Image (cartoon, rainbow, N blue to C red; front, side, top):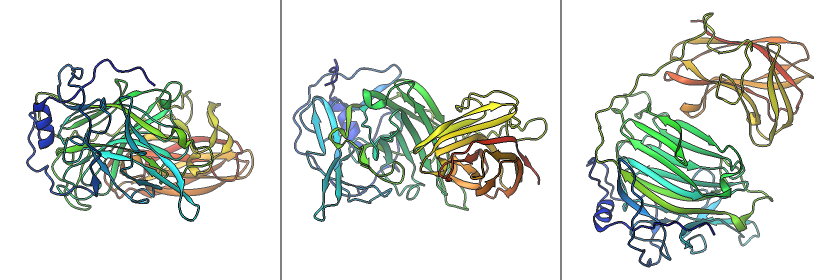
Length: 476
């Protein structure tokens, strides 16, 4: 058991009343109410009273509401337990239940546990839990701090996130907006993701926090977000790792709703442990369900005394091309690069991909030892490319391999639901350098975060690849 916290909490009657009303003293939001919950929910068994003690204060903020989980059962004044069938979203495998085996309080922590059993045909069947503050602790703007310990294991997907109380206000997802405070993939437990979803077409922006050493599953960590009019900031253990301020929402092909929509309405916190799905993949024989637990030490929501809601959307800033018109920085590999995303190039490994990359003699050299299971399992990228609607671009580069093999190249849009400005294009590499050239016209929204990708995973080979003279330029 972890070291017990020294301070526990329950809301004062004033704070509890404010939370239950879905309002706050800093801003008002007459549009943010809803008459129906998003899906069926049930109430947990009656909670025992929690100690009437004080949550730590936070400079510049007032406490709006909090739960330290110091009782014996989940507090039904603060939380719903949501019921969902398998496959409800993201092709996830779990059934969300209200069973005390899936959602319970233990030693001062809320525990959401995923359980593997068998159905009547002997096939694997998974249950887990999801709790939400819908209609009980809704709020607009504030600092959310959730201290949690995540599980590790293939196919486990813990999440702490927020959805709007009234999803009809700006339209169904993603137009309504979504704020993901923390997501961790159980097979990569050293990485936490913070994401917002919005817009039509679907757009997203995602920050990535990588633990310097060890696993996020080894201990509890604070995952927090500061949500203000016109800006959302993400932290792990008080370390700022991502800031976003340039979202939009509206009908496709129509006008945008005035900024800062959709993030100017009441939202609520929810926490769950998913099993399987389109992002983490399904569990395998290595997944340890005995320890498949998302443990939450506390949830604390603070608010500033007031917020300036008179904000304007910042103009989109496009990075300048090089002096010779190249939109790729260090495309001739004349400079060394850390290849970790802090400079111009980023070498990435996912889903079983293994290998290394280096710059030598004006070439990028990629050595793979495992091709992984996905084309992006071994990947070289350059982010933040300026892509402007209506312009035509030309990508050129030279490449070869130690033996004949394939590689896939594309220009993607991480902020725009990973659509492709240049479609995934498979090319045949030979042992001699060849020059490859592709023209494409950008017909979507302006985007200052396009991304050039060289994908070398799952191509049937781990042969060494060399790339040089990479260039993207505007041709018309």
